Structure formats: C-alpha cells, structure tokens
Amino acid sequence: MSSRTHRIVAIVAALLLLVTMVSLSRDFGFTWDERFQQKYGEQIWDYLHGRVPRATFDTDEGNQYLYGGLFEIVAVAAQHALPSVDPYVVRHAVNSVWGWAGIVICGLAAGHAFGRRAGWIGAALLTAAPRYVGDAMNNPKDIPFAAAAMAVLGLTLTMDWRCPRLTWLRAAALTGAIAVGIGIRPLGLVLLLYSAGVIGLASLVWAVAGRGAPARPPGSAASSREPGAMRTLAMNVGWLALIAAVAIPAGSIFWPYAQAQPYVRPLTAFVKTTQLDWARGFDVLFDGQNLGAGDLPWTYVPVWLGISLPPVILVGVVASWLVVRRGLQEAVAWLGLLAFAAAPVLAAIVRHATIYDGIRHLLFVIPPIVALSAAGWSAVASTRARAVALLLLAVGIAEPVLFQLRNHPNQIVYFSPAIGGPKHAFARYDMDYWGNSVLQAVAWADEVARASGVPLVVSGNPIQAVDANGGRFRALQVVPRAASTYHLDIRLMRGPSGALKEFAARPDILYTVATADGTPLCIVIPGPAFLQVSDRLKLRRD
Image 1 (cartoon, helix red, strand yellow):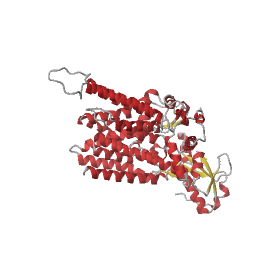
Image 2: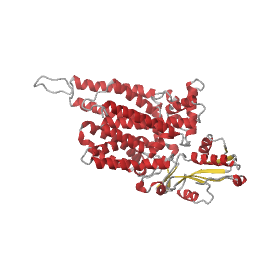
Image 3: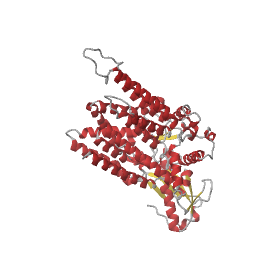
Image 4: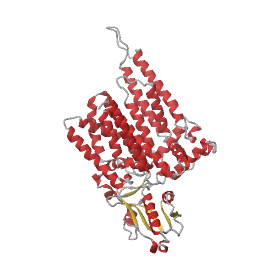
C-alpha cells in the first residue's frame, strides 16, 4: 500500500471511529463526580465572561479548584452551542472525542516508533480495551489527560536519536501537549519533567560523545566541545527552557486558581492532589476485603492492571522486548514507554499512595502499555511465525470486543477471563464504582411509567446519579431518599462485600441492570410508596 493510500485509509478509519464513539456516548450515564465538575465549568465560563471574580476560586472548599478547567470549559461551550440537548449528553460526547483522540495518538505514536503495522495494532488494541472505552465516555479528567500524556510521549520518543535536535515545530507541539496536560491535571508538570529529562539526557550523551561535529583534519584530536555537538545541546536546553516558560502559564488559561501565580500554584496543586489526604478514608473493595483507600496492600495496582487489562495486551507487552534488538530508535522508544508506564506504578507502591475506584487515577499509563503491546505483536508478526501471530492477535482482540458488544454500555466493569470475568469479581472488587449503570435503571423506570400511564416518583443511591439521569425522562420525578413519597428505589451495587451479596439476594428486586454473565450492577426495589401504584404498573423484569 502506498503512503498516500495508507494515509487516506487511516483518515477514513479514524473518522468512522469518531462518529461511532460520539454516537455511542449518549448511552452512558452520569457519574457522581460530574455535578460539581459541571458547576466548576459553568463558574469558569462566567469568570471568562466577567460575571465572576477570579478570587472566587481561591477557596479551600472541595478540591476541584486544584484542577485545570480545560475539559470543563470545552464541555460548557458545547452545551451553550447545543442548548436543546441534555447537558450531560453533550458532556459525554465531548468526553468521547478526547477518548478518540487518545486512540488516534496512541496509534500514531506506536506507528512512528515501531512501524506502520504497530500503529494499526496499537489503535486496535486500545479501541478493543473495554475499560478505556468505558472511561472515554464519561471520565473528564483521566481520559483527556491520558491523551495529552500519550501525545507528549509520541513527540518525545520519536525523535531521531542519532541526532537529537529539537525543531521549532516539535517544540511547539510539545508545548501545546504539555499545556493541555497541565490544563486538565496538575500532574501535567510531570510530562514537562519527562520530556525535558529524556531529551536533555539524550542531548548530553550525544554531545559528550562528540557526534555530529564538523569534519576535522586528519590526525586532529576529537573534542566534545566542538561546535556541532555542543551547539545542539545548548539549543535543546534553550528549547526546553522555553517550553517550560510557555507551557506552565498556558496550562492556566482555563484554571482561575492557578492564574494568580501561574508558576507557583500549579506546583502547589500538584503536591496536594498527589497526596489525596481527603480520600484516605474512602471505602475500597479489594480481593473481598473492605479497606480504606489509604490502607491498601502494595499489590493493589499490579493486581488491578492484571485483572482489568485484556490478556492480549499483556501478552504483547511481554513480547515487546523483541524490538530492542532492532536498533537505537526502537530501543529508546521501548525503554521510554516502559519507564513512563512503570514509574507511576512503582511510585504508588513505594509511597503507599491513596488510590480508589480501581486504578482510574493511573489511567494515563494504559496507552503507553498498549503501545508496548503493539510493538510486541508487530515484532512477533515479523518472524517466521507471522501467520500464527496474526491469528492469535485476532483471537485475542475478539475477546474484549465481544465483551463490549455484549455488555454495552457497561464496558467499565470488564474483568479478565483469566479470573472468570465480572461474575467472579463480584463482591471481591469494586465494579461500577462511578454509577454509569444507574442510567439504565432510570430508563427502565421511565419505560414502566410510560407503559403503565402512571407518573412515577423515584429515588435511590447515589441520589445525584438518579437525579441527573432523571433529567432525561419526563415521566419521572426524583426526590431525596429522606422523602417517603417515592415508588421506586434505585440502588447502585457498590459497597462492602457482605452488603452486596445481601442486596443481590433480595426477593423483592423489580429490575436488575446486569452484565451478560448475570453480574448485578444496579437494582430497582420497591420504595415506601410502591404499594400505592403497584397494581397499575406493567413491570418488565427482563
């Protein structure tokens, strides 16, 4: 296939994926962080239009002010452009575009680093990863940040390491990608340190080795101080300093808190958000035990990676060492991806970090892991076992793809078949920790109300998810759980292991949102006023 044809095919495939992801995003539910994130975005919108002073964001209330508002302002702008559409439907559509960008960037980075085939495999693997797709629809921090991080990795690790010179175009792209990362999470500062460290070290090694220096007369001594090498080192250092000087304040454009001290407050926010002191007491279900987020065993992150990533990705990572023998370019890219993916995991273990909701806070390591896996599968496909490798790859990808097809829109509860899938993870690990499945329960209640011709009052837990999702349906009224007037009680299956088993065994369950293997994610049970309408309801229990 010619380069031009390949480019056209890639563009068409990317556009089809974009349309598909945006179309599917409306099926995903409100997550219980979204209400205050939406409010934060609206506050920033008002601030940018002169209706709210910047000092409003100098607060100790909550922790949202510690994060940039880039995603939020884009979502709110889209909502203003589409006022007739439910605001959370618009948010999820915007979210899906970020998720799509992460897939495209992962494919491009893998392709430039390890070859065209690796690029296609990387994009396919990340698209097939159920949890990534699930998060791509309603995770407004971790998915956009993962896309920005992968862009920085791609721009950094695809330099020509035989002559590591930063061009103005690459420097500008790095500045933009780092600024986007900072504008979403203060952790974006790490992207600056990473790119500066990799490029700076490579430039120093290249300069000390005296490579790239001008030709010398025969018999003259080689010197690391010759203009070619040293000038390149100096230029790269200058570019990196300029990138830092521009990217940090640029990341504060939609971050009112940081604007007061754009070179200081992002660092302050970074320190506070990496400690997560406010979350140490959050409940976490891990290996059947009810633990605090600040008291997890060191195995938490490694185990979650093992049980939440499809086996086809893990196998590819193991095989990726084969690319090291191909040459300097591939070896540096492999090492850079591995270091970026492994460092946060090791840091979480060593620091005994506070983590909850699976490993969504470390979601940014997934695209580089997938890029490594793509490199591994591509390398195996370059051997004599090409046909076997491609067959195994196809079978491996089919497994998570089938899971997505059978369990849409609950991709977020994927568990590896190696541990028996969601059924065997139930009451052992947190499942739908953000409440995505509540939308399906609310939709069922709306269907019952319309089919029966009876307006229904609903409540549930988490109430914010029931309330926000209820805004899509006119046949329902949502009230607080303290009221005694609601007919249906919607409960997300999240909590201690014993309570989950008890709720799953209740004989009065009216409806269950479940995975294809029967794992309950959300249930609907009678509310205090259920008997007032029970004889008029046409219940659909399937």
